[in-house]
Length: 165
Image (cartoon, rainbow, N blue to C red; front, side, top):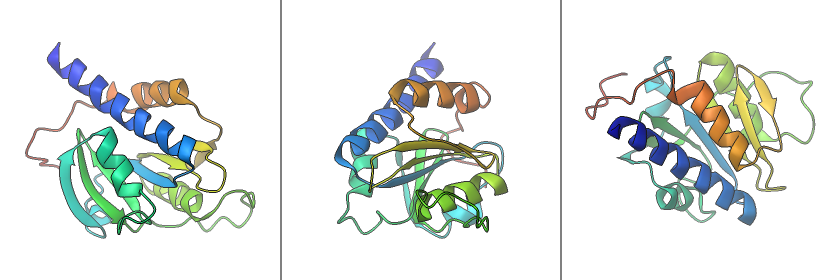
C-alpha cells in the first residue's frame, strides 16, 4: 500500500529529525495540522511548501537559520510554512521548566486539534503536546506511537494541491 508507505516515511522523517535535534539540543516547535485548518497560522510564517524530510526540518531549526525561532506547520505530507507565530497560553501556573516554545505549543493545541512537538534547546527534552496536555521526556518510539495514533490513522494525506485552508 503506497499511501501507507508514504505516511510511514513522512512520520519517520519527522521523528528522526526530532531525535537528532534532541541529541544536539537544537530547539524546535513543530505543529502537525489535523482537521482544524491552520491557514491563519501558516500565513504568519514563510511559505516552504516542501516534502517532509529529516534534513529540511533540521536545517530550518538550525540555530543560525532565519526561520529557527518560530513554529513549523506540517500539513499532510508537506512542510507548509516555517517561522510561524503561534498563540501563547495564558496559563500562569505552568512549570518554570517550560519556556516560550512550550507556552506556544500549549496555546496552539488548545486552539486547534493539532499535535505539537517541542524540543527544548536548554535540556534537549522532547515534549508531545495535544489538547493542552504536555507529555515530556518523549523518545523516538513514543513519537512514532503518538503520531500514528493521534494523526496519521485518523486523516489521509492531503491531496498534492494542499486544498485545505
